[in-house]
Amino acid sequence: MAFPAAETAIVLLAVWTASSFVPFVPSGVLAALTVVGYAYTTGFTEPGLAVLIALVLVSLLASAAELLAGTLSGRLGGASSRSVVGGALVGIALLFVMGPIGLVVGVGGTVFLGSLYENSAEPRVAVRQSVYAVIGVFAGPFVQAVILAGVTVGFAISIL
Image 1 (cartoon, rainbow, N blue to C red):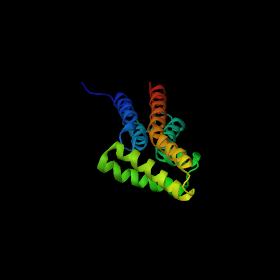
Image 2 (tube, rainbow, N blue to C red):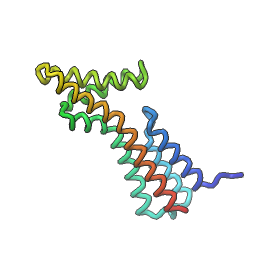
Image 3 (cartoon, one colour):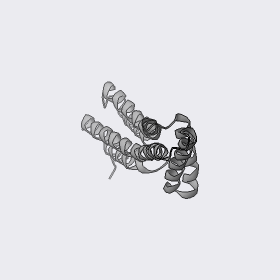
């Protein structure tokens, strides 16, 4: 039995939602491409143009939210942009070596050390800033998954 394009697109959107928790998978971009791909198969008649643009923009917003969550959270905690960006780079490097624990150690440790250096060895401030940054790193995939779940539901409602 052939699997129609609508069901295929909905299944793919559900897969991209679940893949929000897998490092280095551009789930929001893949969701946007899935929506555009489905629209292409229908000759851009379904979903409507306004819905198509909205779903694509929200999918891309999900990717941006996931990418910026750690940085924004670290900044909200009071860490400098330099220590948060450095933490993200070290975390990504350690992700390849140690897995997800490396990401946490890299982000938290780098932001902690950077904050200690910048705040004249004030450990309480450094701990708070590093905890905020780590929370943001973990919150990003959840935010992306919630947004993409909304895209999946919105897409399904618009085509069914």
